[in-house]
Length: 508
Image (cartoon, rainbow, N blue to C red; front, side, top):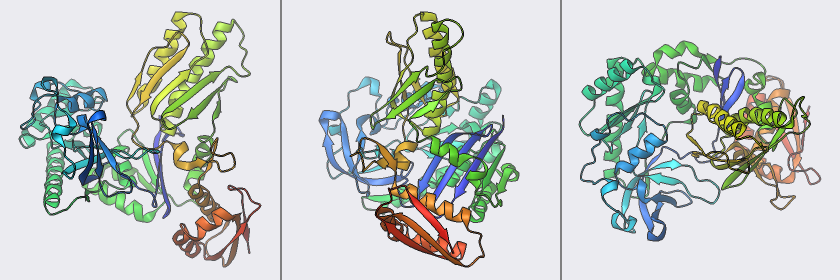
């Protein structure tokens, strides 16, 4: 299997795509105008304590209060239990857990009002982005990820990635970590840490420990709310978390970001530098690898299967439903065989779509009814197997008598549909269309495709009047940068008779 990591870096938007055998399996999008909060550490101020739901609202300095559950507020066994359940690492020595001055969650009943008071300052980390009407989710259990390690300053424990399966290697890593770490500090050894040398392990341990000390010093001289530590950019996070030995090459189309990646790898993984490539093709990077087509298909509700069947994906803020249908597929044998074959084909597509679209939360899959219990079990096991490639934690319940499977997928950021679209203004919110920013960025890419750098002249844009306003106001800075890049003046003309996604480009 050939794995590639592609990064399309523009001033207005950065997109990261992970490809397996030339198929996009994961997509990350970051827009400069939006917030990127997960992993950030803040000194927050408690606004309200809500005993009824055992949570609190915390001001961290963004436009919407974030929320903190009681189980994310204090150091207890629940924290490590959740990490283990989420599949973050393997716990071989639970007795080594140490929580300074705290009791086990199993031996006491702690209420949020006993831990937090209104006006209190508290150090927190964002664990989930704001989604819809919900604010960001916080935790007081700080984790600081590195290339090979994750530092957990609030616990004393050593964890090892489940993907490291060699028992001798796990024993070696655990022994090294015991010797290197400071007392009462916790570390998870990531998959990328397999076969790491003692010197590299010691260097990264000291680096993360020093970083934590600097965060604590900043806290002492800061007033709430304030940002204490900002996570890496989406590009360096992709290098840290996705660019492993399983990825054959990384391709990026920005010389500036290419240099930042090489400097990052100089420190943490020099051996990977030879696998980084600066893209210099005339065709845009995502066009050359067929990713733009895949992104557009991710906005479709109906996905056709090779057999002629199809699935329909409907996503709301709280729930995603997936309906499986035979469509034009009639099979060659019995109806039951036709249904089972369609369901099994749908299983692979569903697992792929969940990962590619980053669909999270509660998911209900309505498979076509099967009469035999053995076939139901076969489809259920096939779904669990297909989800094993997903890096995000999933939990799948058995198939009900109605042919429904309920499952959950951990959600930390918006799915592609909500990120790239907005409620349709023409149908009063019953459907979705591309957001203004997505349309503007489509226009930028089309301009770069059609205009050869070096030629002088003018480019006329005919767009919907609402898009005209967005281009001239929110995207004005990027328009000016684009004019310099293509060496042409861009003249924007609003057309009231154009629909939101309609635009025309004229070159003179």
